[in-house]
Length: 75
Image 1: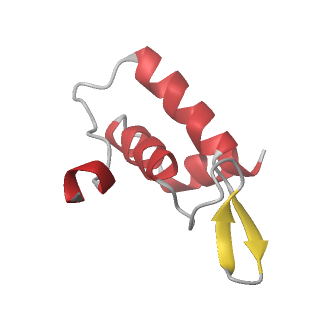
Image 2: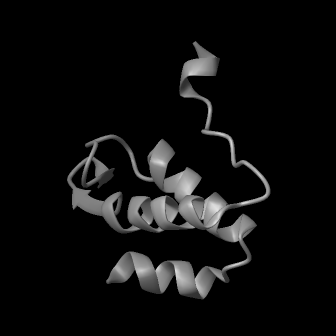
Image 3: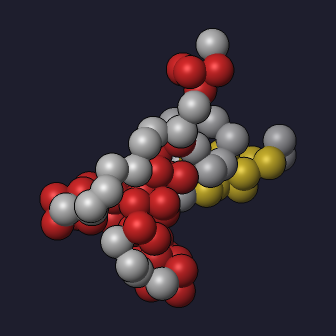
C-alpha cells in the first residue's frame, strides 16, 4: 500500500516538457480551505496532493526558485 501512496518520481534531467506539465500541476492543484483543513481543489484530498508535491519537486529540480513556483501557483 505504501507504494501506491508514495510520491511520483522526479526524473532527472528535467526536460522542457516536464517543466510544462509540472507548472500546470502546480497551478491546478492548489489548496482550498475547508472546515477539515486545506484540500486540493482538483482532488479533494489533503493538500498538498501527490501531483502538487511532484510539480513543486520537478520545478525545484529544474532550478526554479521557490518564489517563482509560488508566484506561478498564485496566478
